[in-house]
Length: 138
View 1 (spheres, one colour):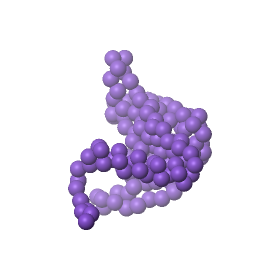
View 2 (cartoon, one colour):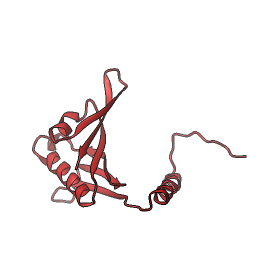
View 3 (cartoon, rainbow, N blue to C red):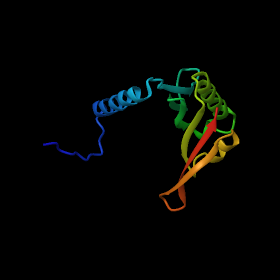
């Protein structure tokens, strides 16, 4: 008999097993595998990374999963440069579009200023907050 486990701890081995299984299925169905991780990082002279953007490309789409800069680095164009490099690498990889989600109190206006468009919004907690889904044609 198969036991179904509920847990709030994710074992890296489970993540690898499930990810590899899903990737193998997708590769079989589509006939190709083009997924690649992507990191565009801000780095100090001493090699410290205070922030940057992380994501991936897959099936012709660029996913911006995480983007963070400390307050001391905001407003000076570093975020704009990181985003532009992220998008340029997506184009280089052959991605036609990019997708992300942000939270209403985070950066939807920042992305909109750089050509991203909202395609969905879902209310979440606390009340008055929402997840904002955005896309950009590359």
